[in-house]
Image 1 (tube, rainbow, N blue to C red):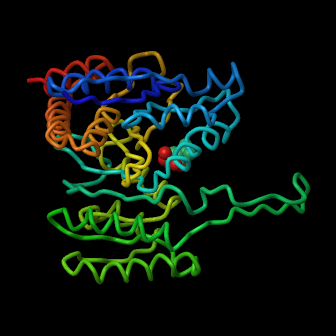
Image 2 (image 1 turned 120 degrees about the horizontal axis):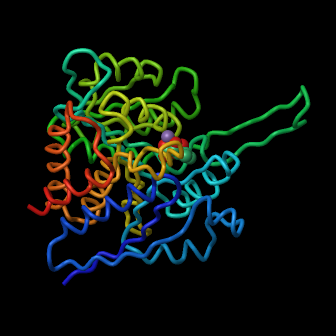
Image 3 (image 1 turned 180 degrees about the vertical axis):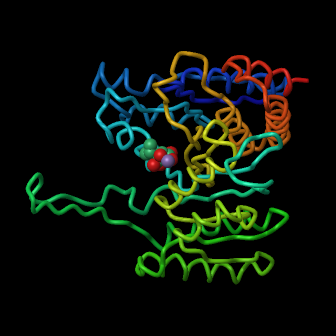
Length: 346
Ligand code: IPM
Ligand code: MN
């Protein structure tokens, strides 16, 4: 029998509630011969206040031993902005070299969208996860004076760009429409933009079946709203990817259904799966949070570990559940999790 050895990080706010439902559905979908082993970690605001720690080297050593990581949400208004973001989330993504930040957007039947008509939305954003303006490469001089200068340098390496571009081409090649869009801003960010464009064009030559296009990030925000069907796979840098995936979530059912994977395709370190949403302290503990994004993140986790059948079962269950929920009063966190667990088992 096989073992799935999972690190579970519920984190802050609604993270606790949604992760519980994610695990419920995971247990229900796994075949009999797979033994689920979970170890919970108490990272987040509570531990930070108690110990001053966000994520230590010992923590990373412990996390390294798991097959994958399931994360709820990290962040709380009681902790200064940036402390947990840099000290936990980004530290983990960088330490485990999660260079493929995978964020699918699919508008499922019955799900409300602010867009007019009946838009067809089914694309996936491959967001670079370890470089760009997220590296913390910058500084401030004359801080606090009226002559303060702050820099935030975007780091782009040929190695880092090529590996994520290659991953995106492979994903595009595997999809029926076989289309890949590079989103950047190479008319202004000419150094990084040209690196991205050159690498993209070079790798494109190896994928003659993949249709390619280039769109500036500002224009991409227009097309995501006016012609979302235009997109199949998008590859982009860390910050552009952060921004456009929130927009993508907003048009395809909202943050309650947006899933993500922070993937290290080499398997050298465990990949981490998390809903795109945050800890939502305003609704925490009330059973109001939609666990669907976490459940869909569990599907991405299963697919990454080779459980394709189970991943697809979860996605089908979510699709059926959302169609059933359409037009009905909002259901509680646990009720949604229960319904999904029944569907994937049945
Ligand atoms: C996300 C979040 C993070 C990011 C923050 C919390 C560091 O917005 O996962 O999209 O910017 O990547
Ligand atoms: Mn974000």
